[in-house]
Structure formats: C-alpha cells, structure tokens
Length: 214
Image 1: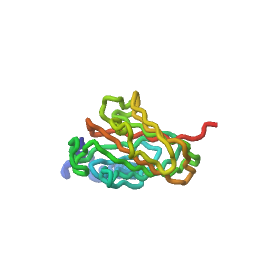
Image 2: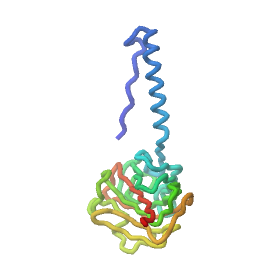
Image 3: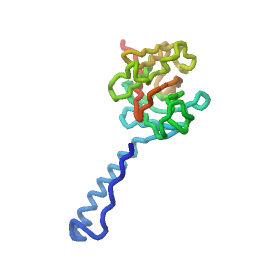
Image 4: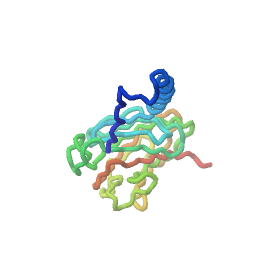
C-alpha cells in the first residue's frame, strides 16, 4: 500500500505575516532537511518483483539484482556490522500472481543468493536464516512461506564457507548453515530457494551469524 504525500500549501494564505513566516519556516526546513539526511541512510533496493530494505538496522545493503529464477536469482549484497541477528525487510513491488512470470509478478518462487561481508570483528562459525510473515513471530508450517519445504531432498542450498545445513519447519521456518567459518572482513555467500504459496505484500528474513561461545 502506498501512502500519498502531503497536500501542497496554498500560496495565498499564511499563518504569520511574511516576515514572521520566514523566521518560523526556516527552522522547520532545517529540521526537515536533517530528517531527510537520516532517512537517506536507509536504502530500499528494488529488483525483480520485490524491494529489499535494511530499515530495521544492524546491517547495510550495498546491492541488489536479479529476478528470482534459478538462472537469474535475487542477489543481495550486504555488510553485517555485528554478530547479532538482523532482519531484511522484503516487499512486493509488482502484482501478486502465484506462478506468474518472474520479474513481472511476485510469484512466490524466489531463488536467493546472499553475499554477506563479516564486518562484526568476530569469526562466524554458523549462520542461520529465519522467515517471518509477521515481524518477530514464527512462520508456521501452514502459512505457505518456507525454505522450499515441499522438497525433501533439495539440491539448491549451498554456501561458500559452510559444508552442511539443517532445515526446520515447525514451529519455525529456519535454515542453519554449519561446519564452517567466516573470518572478519571476509565475505560469505549463501544460496537457497524461498517459496510462498500464499504470497504476502511484506515478509521478513532474519539473519543470525553465530560466534564461538567458549
């Protein structure tokens, strides 16, 4: 849903006489400019039928491309500044049509590649992804959103730095990469398929880098 911008002001009616109006409006304009500068730090990247945002903080998206097919996956390049969970906000930007043409419709089939730079200062020894239809609430088995839960023997889950993975579908939709390591200032790549057979306009991908506990 798009919210229309504010209506314009009349050029013939003022709350103050012209001199006082200038003095009153100038601080407001400075505050507005400051607000825009802060907002510019959060970028929304649109590609295919989706947009991707780092608005919830803790990391920074630096690029996005692709349409979400196996041959042209959605590629998100990002930088994680801590070893704590961060949440990627995903929104549809095209009409929703299950099994529609990728790039023209949000069709519920999203081949993903995440390229994550470890700028946390600590080595990662595991990395977990979790899908959520509602922020901070588990995506349950029956909601249609998952890491390709219909496929019992997936061949499209891969990481450049982790040898193995586990999937969990109840009561969470989670994908854990393990048996590997990502040193500070190194980049790790992940590939997987997200499916949503009851597509929503907005959903979330929680990313949780794990560090040694000892």
